Image (cartoon, rainbow, N blue to C red; front, side, top):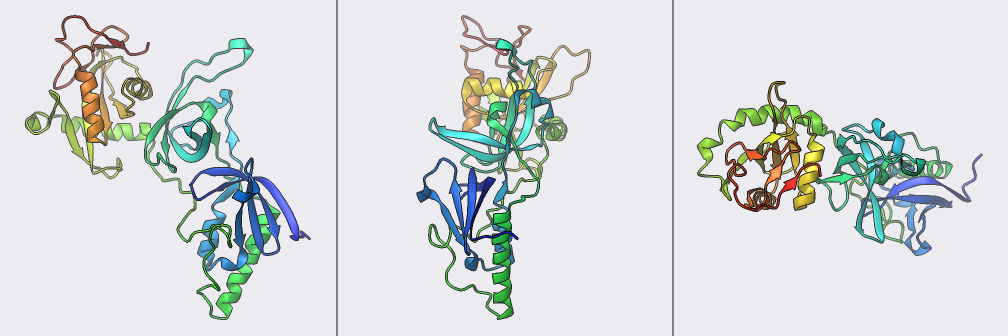
Amino acid sequence: MFSAGAAASGDLEFRSDDNAWYNVTVKLEGDVLRISYSEFAGEHDNIFTANHFRSSSELSDFEGRFRPLSRQLQDFECPNIDPGMPVCASYSSRADDVRFYDALVEGVDYLEHSYANGEEECLCNFIIFWQNGPNSGNFAISSIANICEIQFSKINDAVLETFFRKVREKIQTKMNRGDTSSEGRPPTHNDGGVYQKDDCRPKLKSRLSFFGRMNQDTRRAKRSSGMVKSCEDQQTLNRRKSEVIKQDADIGGMKYQYMILLENLDKGISPVKLAKFLHGETLILPRVYIFPCLTYELYARGAVVLNCRTNLEKLCDFLDNPDHVILSSQGSNWTSCEARNFRDNGGRSHGARLGE
């Protein structure tokens, strides 16, 4: 039978109070669970005592903060990454601080791999939607080197199983004697644990994927495009008419959405590529949708959607700058469906070409 006197085990990751996931080892010392973070000194250990859990729901929340180690994805595995896939991705606020947070893959721009020096290197771009961390609720562009596959298999760890059993026994004892308020106070940092009552279980929100929403938003944009002229005088930003659409249940996130309609885009261009181009020029990462086009049409149409008026004005400043001419790979100017500011630009221009 398993002895929990001073047993330890590893190959786990734990979601700490900062919502980031860390590689940890766990050690059971009587009724005390010690969580040690890999590559961190012992002073950063977290301590949890079995007696301080007040209910089964608290224990369930705590159990949800553990899972098997996420697996680093390899370059050849990019075809297995699809929109809607939950991942654990790295985020760096500075060079010496790299943390891992849950995210959803929103879109994939599959590119030809490099085989320099005989080694395969994935050059694809992945749009991810942060579920946790400082950028929670925002999009980002990532590479496969920064993405790990979450392991959803059941944790088979004798130390945790023993500790959880001890907690359940103590909770049951309290219930049997009518004590549901817990003895003592809730655990605090390094004094009975850092467990908090709020729900710290990792939650991957059920959301439509980037391309799944594109079909719905395409229909919505077509229905609303006829309304732009009627509100031209109300919504004029730097000579470019932008449509303000109210929040729909499946878009979510903000009270208002701002949309710029574009024409003269390359047929076959991906939303990811267009979003990456705009991000590189403006540091804004909008949601981009490419509308279906007929075979005889020479170009595609699309929409750029933002949830921040400040970013809308910044993007309009970039698009309306008379010193810019943004060209498709075929040499045609981008135009807005309403303002068409790029058609009559004259004189010398410092153009940006998509795809270069």
